[in-house]
Length: 410
Image (cartoon, rainbow, N blue to C red; front, side):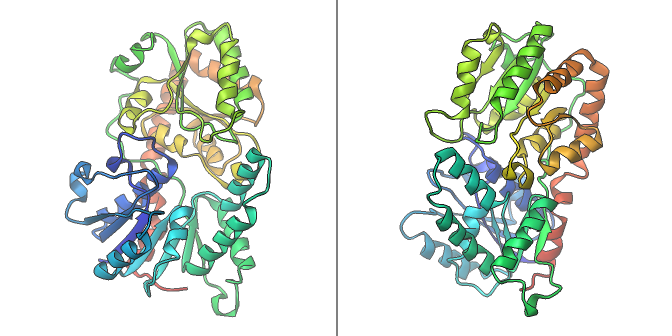
């Protein structure tokens, strides 16, 4: 068994009362299978303005996991990380998410290094530049990416499109040379569905949480969970929900999440303005960010989860973690087509889909599920089975689990 130094965000268990991001889930996705395989893992975790609490560590991790909170970004963090590394003496290093891959470039080590970049950084930076209406920071970000690409021995991303993108980025960084000819630099680690307890399909437990919002047992609940980012198409979302609500007076929209960036004209603020003028505004329940500990209950008490994107490069080369969270709880989903994951879910029968910007089709898909209990139950079973097999943490991390058994430099 190997000694693995894993550098990333805290897994959700250690920060259950804050806003949980995809980066927290990604660390969990890598950590859980490595511990299950019997490896000893030293987790160097942290993010700005975040304090982890290991008292909530799952029992199955105890004895295999050494937890070392690191004050990334604060004075002395580089020395702190180096001391942990030197004391642990790892066989390999895993850095999870771009920010922590960049932190890891400061580490002095001879251990082989796996770097996971969850979503393409260049396209994320482009989306941020579009939001800011300025290109400031692009060249700095490209410099950061060059550091990461120069340091890693093997890289992974969220899907095959990103894998191809990363090969191109490595080529531009000079890593495709005579010494690395034929070497598989990049692997795919698709978004994984977190382990979940047995799910009752159809739902049997009462809607105690949603009842506080005036939602009845017989109502049909459309759930949004996560951030409203630059690529969230709120206009199409609002039009589709308006059509569906006009046809079905029992249909409610529940939103758990809010804007992911501060700007006067962010998409979440626009959605609030649209809802404020709607004749159905009493059926829109925008609850803001909720603690991670509450999220499973929202999944269990809802009827369908939704995801909607605008079409640009981040959508194509990225993924949507909220979808795998939802199906892990047996929640069927409706999503726009764009990210690789949307096609996988559609082809498996775990999702209904629509083209980007097609609010009429989206509204029709919502109405179809609201009116067809048999279809909804069939999709729920399919979604849960897909989550617990092909998209399980263990299955999606097969490539990294095999590498950790015999880590080697590029």
